Length: 335
Image 1 (cartoon, rainbow, N blue to C red):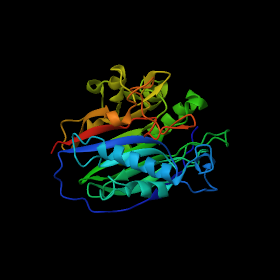
Image 2: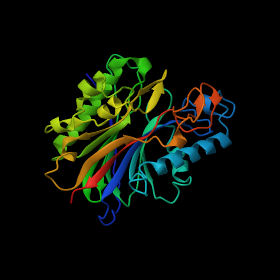
Image 3: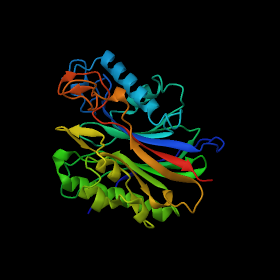
Image 4: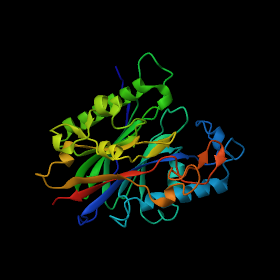
């Protein structure tokens, strides 16, 4: 049995006139976005100026600049405004998110933040950035995975955000599932929680349009995603109440969001509920999904050429972006 703990907020804003034909929704694991301040409530000793990674103000500012550049560029070939909504993983606290949205080229884009502290042992959380001119937040909850009999097990909470995307209701579930080291059973339990959250939204809201996003620490074909979550990879076979994972085909075609021992994995996924595929109804529809692999995010030479350009490899500072590539999908308006 899995127990759920809920924390709620509500906030309201004004959406602008409905005139966008396409919207970018993304997800990005930022690879340890920590500040340089010692926080007793966070396991941040490695990310201090005197810590393992010599995490100085200069390195922190370089990290913010890199993350802001990457986020602003996601899907910019489709929509020059960049993502309307983007889920994030591996952020330390709301302060680093505030610093991020105040860093060019994100500064001035109007992003707002949804964030909750998680009980994660490393002190990292998930979060959501959104543009209130496009997306009005109605409600959000932070949902803890609690496993009976294992009081010492802690991981990232799963965050649900429901709002209006240019007037039409949309819910997002932002995830960062337990690590590979913890074993597949914990990710399968996280998948069960995520499916429960998705099903609850479908019960509460008729024809709920839901986007599940996150670093799932599993590929689309692993049991946690394909069985426990029940996400399927063939769009034409999706029936009412089911979930579609476009990342199945992307992985089959040889693309991924991170590498391990020279092999691409696609742990970063964006999954949609069936109403986002229903072409018979009006409103926002899933169009396509992709891994954002701009050249500046990749190693350009050497033995790791083509791999994500990381901030660190081991304890060696590379000054790059993240060990993960961002993923995104395009929503098109069927009105």
